[in-house]
Amino acid sequence: MQASASFASRASSRLLRMGRAVIDGVLPPRCLGCGEIVSEPDGLCGRCWAGITFFAPPWCVLCGAPFAHPMDEDTLCADCARQRWTWDRARAVLRYDRNSRHLVLGLKHGDRTHVAGAFGRWMHRAGTDVLAGADLLVPVPLHWTRLFQRRYNQAALLAQAIRAAGGPQVAADWVVRRRRTPSQGHLGAAARERNVRGAFAVRRSRDLAGKRVVIVDDVMTTGATVEECARVLKRAGAAFVGVLTLARALRVGG
Image (cartoon, rainbow, N blue to C red; front, side, top):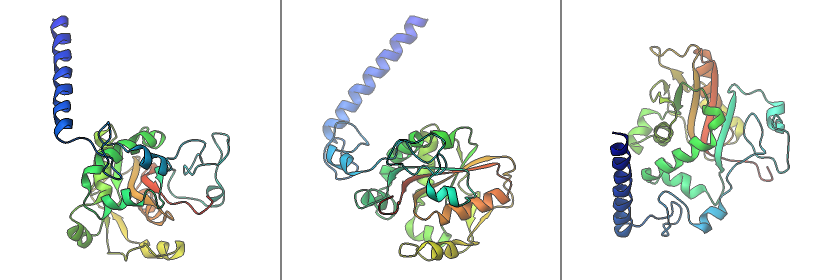
């Protein structure tokens, strides 16, 4: 019986490799950034990879901002040392800058929804310490009018991809956006905070008491949006609120 199962497993693996070889011959895998043919699906070519800054330790124990020099594992960055966040821990995969912008905006505004699977796997790996013990993934919601226009919520797609990579359950509709907020693209930190104040709410029928929750979004810029989401989650009883984003904007020189 055991030998039969082993043979079936080897045969299945062989068929999968053959099937992939056929598909790659017809539709070769392409770089997620520039479209150049690459050796593995859902990857980047050498040039695109070299241009993107992926976050890795040493980093701030709280927000994951990278340090330029070796630091102790429990070191806080300057921002976290002087500011009290509502969320408990945050991580991001890569730096949001001119080299990565097209990747992020391609998903957000360019209908490149097929890249969400790869990005979700990246986020799952980068967010190990945020996801540990988490009960729910809560994507930052869009207002229904914007969702109607865009047809999808990129944060929800990323959350579903993290779930598929081994993450916790997705609570896609537990937090709602009560009012449509203007685009924050050209707003400063204070204006962003005012813009999202009171914009989110937890649905009354959802029980968050004692839950460990991770907010999912595409980009963290000033942190105003995830901070406001964290406030409503904590008020609803969440015991832990983490933040996991694909990209994060850092100040020049930061």
